[in-house]
Image 1 (tube, rainbow, N blue to C red):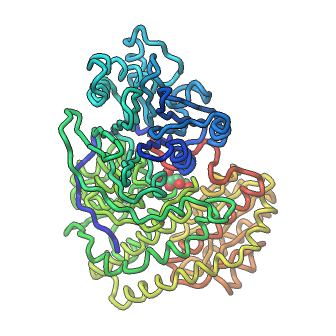
Image 2: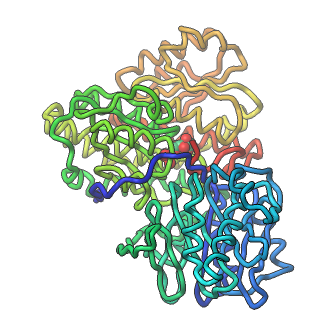
Length: 620
Ligand code: F6R
């Protein structure tokens, strides 16, 4: 069932959300180190240039940090295991200061009795650092000022009130942050705070957890309490308490998360990405079951003159599929904008505009900023997101939750097809409600959707041709992905997957646009991937392919099984089973995900953690 969450209050002003790091905290009876390392392992896909832990024991706060992947930290800890049952851990994606041990978190106060881990940016850190005269700084980070500020404020409470010290320190800070703090003087206590960066509390029996991302907690608990903007939390083994900045108590019920912990493991696959590509048979089945009935519950505005879809990257590509579908079935004009553009300037939002925000993580800074513009302009916002409790889910008027489960690979795969499925269902329902899609056609589309998991299975069954092409074309050629209508987005998405994980140059382009310029690039070194399943524009695609062949470009096609016209003009064909044109982007995306995957592995790339990228782009 789609879960519909009513509007639940808005977050603070939009600032930058520079968090691609990970935080884990534990307090309870277990040895903290094991929980921290396990949680960090599950968060390593977020930021991965250095890591560190702090554990409280009889010797005070014990810290270990290491640049590089988490394995480097784990290696050091083998010779220096840290005992203690309260601790914090962090994986870093550098913003301020280079990648080295001194800049890795946790950072400590001068006396070493307070340690902090931080995601985000302290914008006024230079000013604060100048003010903190007499404090000895040991790193180039913005985070370290937090440790010293809290130390200063703590001394002013007579060394008695850690919570007051944290809130007083935060009064001085501008920026965005998720923060975990531990005090040597207070056994069994962690403090946490949030401004514009996600942070969740996990509730156990006699033990409690803190993390920047649910995935770190799923092994231990499904009872989750996301912190809201400007809240601070006190976490001890017996429970968690949430406060506002004036230390007024806030009561809120935890939510239950259904995701399985195993989704954060590779399950026998060499990479998360391959596992997640193969999971699509199940995730698409999950998207379908009960969906039609549940969509009736979505409360859409009475008047919709136009639709604006906002998203970034892969989610934007899903939006492009949604545009074709909504225009075809609901006969509404649809604009699809990248949120990074729609957040500034004269935007298209207003009353009568249904804004659909698509974001797997629900935390993408640009998407959130565009959503705030939309709401301010009087537009109703329907979010499509994978993460319950995410900022987007909380700020939107209505939410359609995707059922892709946790995605660990940095390159989106199963969440893309889930986003597309949600938009296609939404399009069909809009058409049905508006009377622009005849009832029989609506039922036929729903029936076709139910066949999809079986069709996905067939796409995944035979990957020999894909692997052959990956080996053949991985030797440094350029790729041009072309498509039209429903599969223009597939061309963009296929090219994005290729460049993200293989680092080879790949462009996505409208097939009909090639002759307006890009055809000049084509020669015998250009590999062209043509997405040409059966549909309204297949013949046009065949002509466009011919234009490329005439210039000696090589052609890999994605075509419907048995289609001779496309095969006759292609060097290689990835077949997908016959389906309604509207659903072809779901099936066609899969061989292209695999092509990118096998090309990247042939080149020895780090598929799950490609260079320079992070899973959730919470930075502007
Ligand atoms: C590419 C990819 C990104 C995301 C984009 C938006 O594989 O994953 O392009 O799609 O950063 O992320 P969400 O959907 O979390 O808003």
